[in-house]
Image (cartoon, rainbow, N blue to C red; front, side, top):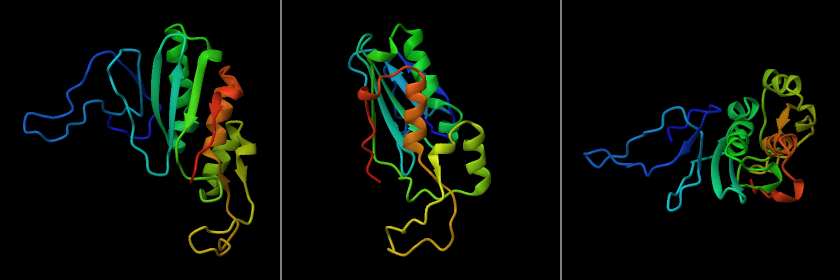
Length: 175
């Protein structure tokens, strides 16, 4: 997918040729940050750097999802959209399993006050902290106390609100 930090999810039913005639990679799914499929022998995936990669598996309908959840996708409900698509196809939320991949952690994810306020307004005040964190790269205290955002926690809470069982969600996400 051509990931652009949206909350757009696409259900894949057919194999997609990922190369153009001149053998150069060709982005086919524009403005897409999550893929879902229940078709055997189709591999899906997303790319992340500091954003949160999330994999979902609905064992009752044998469907998988790969989600790229940056702050924009997270606040706009990309996880909710993916779960809703799985439910629309017949999955029961307690049959959906989730796993978080490596992403930026709360300690390292310093944000500005305006963005922190957006998450607070959206009901995720407990996912914002103002602790005096130590920069893991320099081992020095950050110069000033700014808000820090826990993207894994926000997405975890969204999953719980959608009915996923907490014991089906692996939040182990190294920074």
